[in-house]
Length: 204
Image (cartoon, rainbow, N blue to C red; front, top):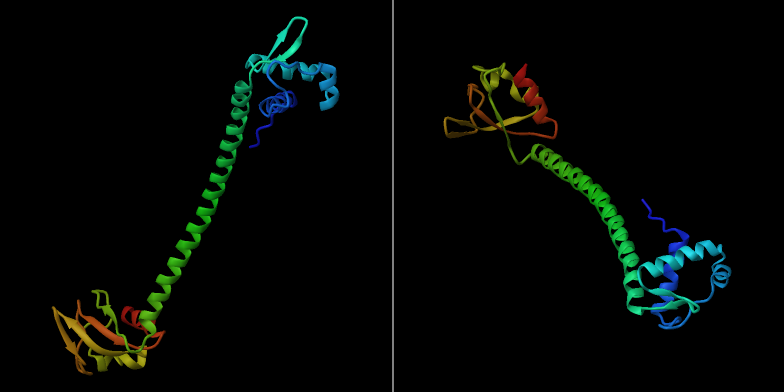
């Protein structure tokens, strides 16, 4: 949301800048309202409001017979800084919101990339024919009690059982007559489709 500064306050800021830059010096008289109104292309009433603001913060003072006189360069700087700081805070707030949005996008991209890496790693685990994957035989397995030969494991899954973990022991190359029991962990090698085929086969 943009902060809009009224035109009379913008004029007050501009006059304060002139005072601080010593275009108008302390003790000097400011031009009459009509002259300032013509210079800023506004009504004398708008200029009056601007001068009133400067009087309220003691940058200028009205003296009888002398008009409006410059009173303080230091107060002019303080007044200017009020708006400079406001602008700075607004800019920082806008930048912060932008950073938060960008971070949200980056976080989304990061999570998406991590998911892809995990997914890709899982796939690599199952498609490398030289690295066996593990499948545990659950109680609902349809092949419990059957031998590897009876199951026609390779014909049905495309995978080869190269090992079996049972009760803490590893059986290497169990052979066609080894039977499948609950809790066994089969070590299987195959291609990229083997894992899904094995899972489906054991659940049939």
